[in-house]
Image (cartoon, rainbow, N blue to C red; front, side, top):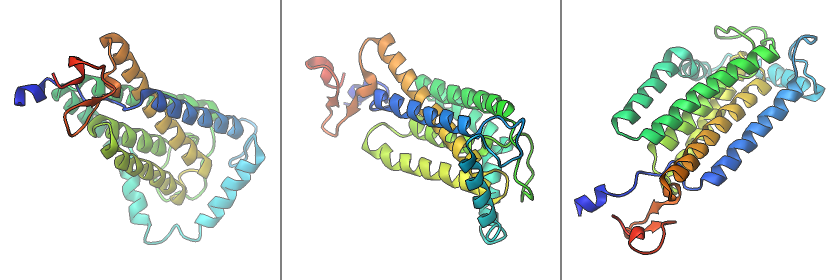
Length: 255
């Protein structure tokens, strides 16, 4: 029986890769629309934006936060500031890739590494292109342009990529997907709380990080499907030992 179990196909990256691809592209589309609405800042002073209501909303959120951003929440926000910064996130992501390679989960390692590289490349390019100013009086050290929030990009990309890499596809993963989404939103809110970013910076970062993580995982899963010639990305092993989405006949049973 142990030999039969070891011959099963590798765990799927995504249970429904086309759904994941659609969700990822939808998030990236929302990020693109928000970026156009924020607009390049050459002729504007932050938080002014190309679509004026967004800048006004950013200013109103900033004003409201000033009444609470010197409270018991500050230690939590500064902890998240450390977790989302390069001093922690870079070695953490490198360790995850190495662990996945040691476990011989090569597709997962590729998806995780690509998410890391592409999210950082997109973040750098958009920051330079928009060149938005930061909010005044930050409660932590900041540097570089404000849009989008790098911590929010990292929080969303790492959280979702971790779930995809280490939690098997299926019902159990859904709980952790919500945990990852909550962590990304919490990271974004912490950046606004610390006066490190405007609200739209944080929202843009979450959309970008989550969109890249889902899109990359879906594309890797779909590429894997074409290369191998069957549909491992849709196989979810049931408790009775059969696989959903596997072709009928001997191939449908555990090898």
